[in-house]
Image (cartoon, rainbow, N blue to C red; front, side, top):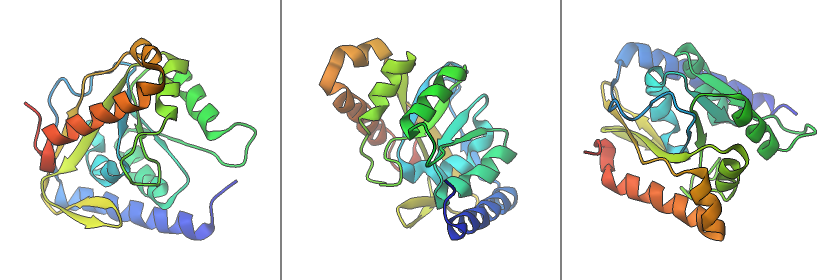
Length: 208
């Protein structure tokens, strides 16, 4: 089931705008060498990091994003694809649930994949399904933050200002076995790892 035409048109309009901004403003992207190895890690980040992530997309080699059929999902697709990042869009109304679609995609893909922890809620809370995805696919899970040192806040999104610096920071991967052993505390473990990373790199500063 496709989303409303208005949603698609608005998202594509933002996508064209972001692509133009990236070409004109050329934000500086700083990524520690250890942040994005081509390992099969499932990275999770808050939805508020979507736009900085779009601007920094060119540094995500061998990377794929899981997106939904929202305005933000469509806005992120064009610049991400232009930068060589794969975008897997979750379908609606089919015979497979969104969880099953993402699970099967993770099983088929060998490289790193990024997913938003809070979907369209934008509250920064990790979904309980994240730990289940790790258990079902055997992938380690690691928090990821992508933030600009200068940005505007707009409808829960952080929009990088012209010529800003975007920094990427990653937490240590948590093995799927550790999440399985944690049981009902697995969501709390993932939330703590994300919160700790956010506190260690406030305002777009890199972690040591």
